[in-house]
Amino acid sequence: MQTNGAGQGRGSELSRRNGAQNSESSSSGVAHSNGLGSVTNNGNTVSNNNNNNGVSEPPASNNTSGTSDMKKKKRLSQSEEDVIRLIGQHLHDLGLNQTLDLLMQESGCRLEHPSATKFRNHVMEGEWDKAESDLNELKAMMHSPSAIVRMKFLLLQQKYLEYLEDGKVLEALQVLRAELTPLKYNTERIHILSGYLMCSHAEDLRAKAEWEGKGTASRTKLLDKLQTYLPPSLMLPPRRLQTLLKQAVELQRERCLYHNTKLDSGLDSVSMLLDHACSRKQFPCYTQQILTEHCNEVWFCKFSNDGTKLATGSKDTTVIVWHVDVETQQLKLMKTLEGHAYGVSYLSWSPDDVYLIACGPDDCSELWLWNVQTGELRTKISQSHEDSLTSVAWNPDGKRFVTGGQRGQFYQCDLDGNLLDSWEGVRVQCLWCLSDGRAVLASDTHQRIRGYNFEDLTDRNIVQEDHPIMSFTVSKNGRLALLNVATQGVHLWDLQDRVLVRKYQGVTQGFYTIHSCLGGHNEDFIASGSEDHKVYIWHRRSELPIAELTGHTRTVNCVSWNPVLPGLLASASDDGTVRIWGPAPFLEVQDAEGLNECCSMDS
Image 1: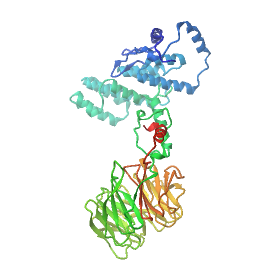
Image 2: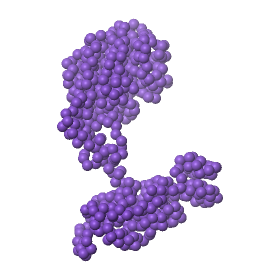
Image 3: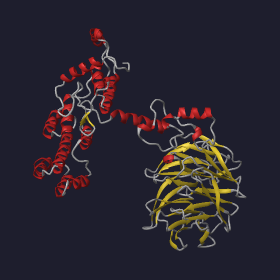
Image 4: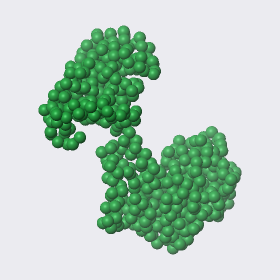
């Protein structure tokens, strides 16, 4: 069908003829041969005087030939009929009812069952008794008898609310007592509905019921709920084509290895003319900056929770705090924290990013709690010179933290360094506090991760590996744990189901402590340093790396993904540098055009 205005007169005649064929016409709008009225936009009838929506009719002299051709056409398959019905529903939602009539007539399809069409029209017109009668017709064609009760309840609830809004309190009370209550369904909701009898005016009712009020908007929402109970053979679920298209877009994004941005879930933000594909040039695979202020091996790096700062710890005994410019994504030296007796091998930000705790290597019995905003040392904590305090984790309340080491110390302290609790004989390698504020996860020298509860002094085994766990981190939702396992590499565990989810390949992991991380949009990616001087990045669902970042000249000890800027990654190495990774810094004109083309669904 060509887009032009030819055959307008005959199209109008055809539309009238189609309308006459309807078994049920809508009193509030024009009826069409597909059985659907054209009531849209707050009850106003949508006029279709638009040259048949651009659909051209064949000349009248060819009518007999055209009819003959249609009879000769092969029968449509079920999938073809489904597609036509989906398109028809979308045309109806757009108000293109004349085009819908032509599509249904030429294809020989029916958009929905006539009884369902009657039901739709009566709901939209507020003819509740007729709508309830329609339900009895539909009952024989439905798979679930209990669905009829639910649908009646929804209909009567709308009827009750509309009576109340109109001030017909006695009629509303009659619906509540004689129609809703006998259904013996959702009695809790009936109690709530009865409370609306006390509303003094319509605005109060709409506010308390969280209801749009009598009219097209609330009835359309009601119809959407009712449609979920009807088999698709009778009536399609609401906006089914849009739902399928959204699912297709989401699936393509999930399968895209480099998708690392938060996008609007609506279809208006994408183009459906091309498949979704993100370029590697948009991914943090390129060195944006090399920080060289440390004068020895850099053992640790960690972005703050708000993403505006990066802390790095070095064998040179200093901690450097860098400011992250959110706009340019460039880092500048903010403060240098000095005075540590040992190198700095671990850092932990407080939940509000006000404080930073620094730990040392195995022979270090102290930890330092710094106020980052002032650059002052709040307290230096040491319980015994024989201790080894190599790891620390903040309680979510920001008022306590736990610390420990491989010599059997496991303490809980407050901000002033006062000992609140201790757990004897636990040789800790790495720590993490869960979001409930009670459980603490600790990897120990028995190649496991156990959960410890300081309130009731209970503990339980959660993860058991066959080799030493050098470090681990936990996802934001507390469900996944990412482990660096000696001689094995990077393992992902499900803490809830207590199962090994995936082993990631490529990384070289001996007995050095290497810290990996989850990151990117929705924590879809995993990054880890390696003893082969590289940074490896995997998509969480893929065992093979999607990127190997080169540039460091010695072991990469730690990586940290910015929690706010998904395109920013930091790595710390024994070569004395910290590298900041981001998307390609500059694209040639041709590259940019190609990038836009392959990423058109993200535009």
